[in-house]
Image 1 (tube, rainbow, N blue to C red):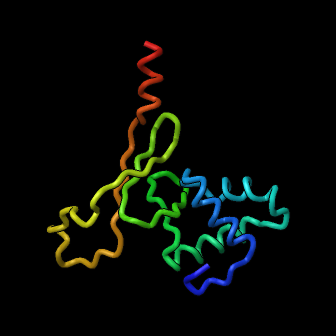
Image 2: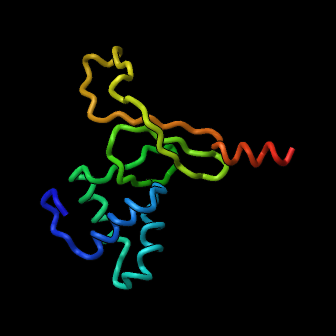
Length: 131
């Protein structure tokens, strides 16, 4: 790993999981999927690793209004859409820098998040097929 982070097997596996799964998992999802492969893994290790990756700008927290924290290995400028039916979170490209913030000109913006909620295409198709 770069960014001055000492690589360890759990750290590498957690980052690989985030990169390959792309499902914006929670700590519980990461833990339950990796503990079979890494029996010594603890939730504390998952939390600590995620915090380390966040501080190195390798991973980011997905903004959500629910009481759940999800993680994303894609730190490029993009938004998120959460389906209210199936719970899936989708990435979509957006020019976050182009968002108008004129009303905040005397503020220091540290982060911009775009988060939509609704019903995804697949769930809409399922609803239409049941009618």
